[in-house]
Length: 209
Image (cartoon, rainbow, N blue to C red; front, side):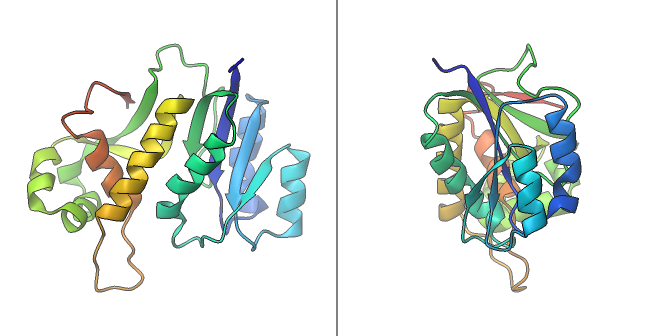
């Protein structure tokens, strides 16, 4: 029976201090499975903290500088290995705090994204991510949409699998170019194009502000 929930968080390069508020707030409202994606920089104190709070780890070779684009492939691999799960939340970790069980929202659809309080056109950073990866034609088509945050997505297992597969394709096929070697772009540009494609918008998911 598929009645279990799963939360997966990208946490490479983070330690107990970085993850404290995520873990403490989550474990007050949710007692099911949690997996953190980490790399070989995980220290003993943080590993012990995970054990105390019953948090599993998935070890990756990805660095903190590339995890933003690598994580979708990793999310998918983890979810494929948990076929008894019903619903999944994929999430940022350092800047997320829980007020209630994230799976208890009565109005959630099969796939749910969450909006920020600005339109794409009103944010130079999000506009740049989309323009450089997709070009001005795509940007002009979606610039007046509200920014959808790529940090948190919740939905049914199969829908999250489909979403992570599509995000992996978007990131692979639409490269972000910059003369600055430290500026690698962001998955949020890819995410906002994907969720605003005409075939997807309003059909596959709900968006919440």
